[in-house]
Image 1 (spheres, rainbow, N blue to C red):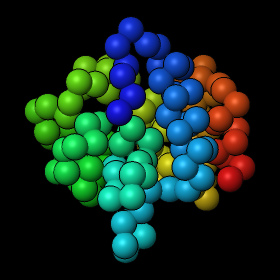
Image 2 (cartoon, rainbow, N blue to C red):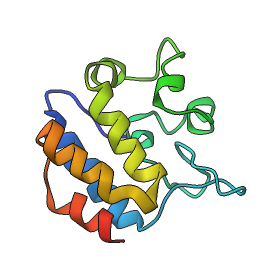
Image 3 (spheres, rainbow, N blue to C red):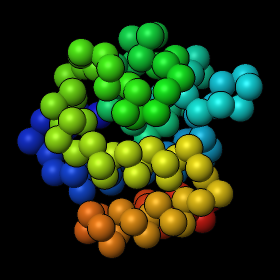
Image 4 (cartoon, rainbow, N blue to C red):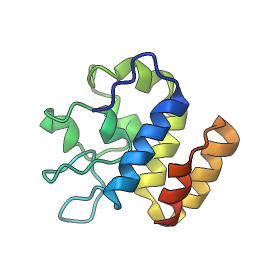
Length: 124
């Protein structure tokens, strides 16, 4: 789990997309549905911000807004609430891989987030 303590959104985004690029693929279940984390250690964008040992969160089948129904989603709860809009776009860049270029452009233009791993994820 990425520790967001005293980090900017841009720093966290860099870590998330670095890990996604290293992973080289989406985190999917056996039905090809995106999930926050799976048994092989893969994660989606937001999954990297959640406690890996929480099976309920890792296996949860909803989007980021749905995930926030949980009162406590781990040590990064405040960061996720504070940066919801940008994190939602990051999640879309993972979940809708064929449209990643659209979501990467939104992160760059609307949230002033840019790093080499965003571009690499877009091209994978």
